[in-house]
Image 1: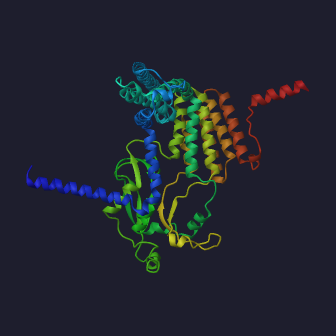
Image 2: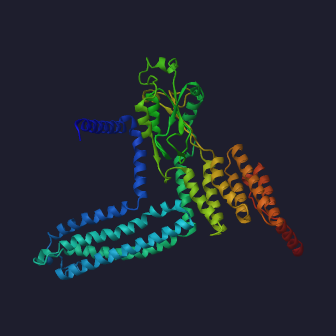
Length: 537
């Protein structure tokens, strides 16, 4: 290698190191401290989603406990502990045989549990879909059982190494062997628990319930149970639409992948450092390429009132400037793009799990409409909770600390709130379309599922808080009715579905429907009921 080539390599390495240091400084800056919990949460979810984390912790725990117990054994003699009946008091040959048996047994059982887990994952992938594999991989009891086995194996090997034949008094770690025996008994009980747990885990109702709980957790994270009055005042007093008239710079995705996380606090800080508004047009879970425009950066004009106020309140806002290379580097750290779709706080991903189970249940290979109906009912629970709660706002403001503390929210004085970031928020109609609407498109020839979808619309009507939600439910009922008319085989089935859809439409449009119970009665059922009443009278 010549001298020029060496200089190029050194310069490139120096530049890479300096860029890494700058990124680390940016990440650890005080302005992004409020964003660190979200980043730590993402890191924790990534660790939990891996199958090796908890077993590795158990192995390290076994490696740590082995010398600890051996050290404790060195401070006790055989005469001091022989009065305890549960303590092992055998010689070195018996201790070595016991530890060898425990190490071999738990390692063999660990292989058995791993084989059972692989078989369950294969079955779950074919029956419930590959998206549900994460729920089995991140199942904490499964990971803990496997970790207990290999942790006991590691502990037994290290204790076995400390058994010495030349010194009987201190060469046999009696407490350590006793603890290994206790762990072997615990592992035997864990094996029974593992089999019982896996039997319940592969049940369709259990899988659907876990997916529903995951969706509710994400809904509680994004949707609040009350309205933020101060935020509504900020939206009313801020000029929401004026930023669209400013100079716009397109924002391209740094790499191709799925948008998994948006760090809002970092985006707010970035928009204020460059004096503008960042608007994103991409939702969580959407796929983008490095040529996609994710949004725009609207730069505030020089004659904006905030620029004049900057001279009197230096903490208020920064002077506007055009995005440069540092802007794009910081923006890339404000979002998280993954090459594959993974679990996150995305509500659509959680609802998609139940939708995928229902769609696979309706396939000709499985043909299990009862499971699809169960998915529709679980989706109704999640969507109803969303309709009753306050949706997240797409507008995010920068509030200077020196000015926000002096404003009393009980007065009609607006606080200093500067629009910084505008995100894309899906509506309830979007969630209904990608969940219940997707099931409807696959259940066009199944009367049971279509009637369950119609029943779901009436159940969701109890959670309606505005006319837009009501119109969404009525539109979905129209699509259900049309799907049945065009695809059901018999006219009697079509008439049954049409009658139920009409009754559901009348029920939803009724002003007293909230205080009434909806029960569909087919024409044949009404005729039979009237005949029975006539005979009884």
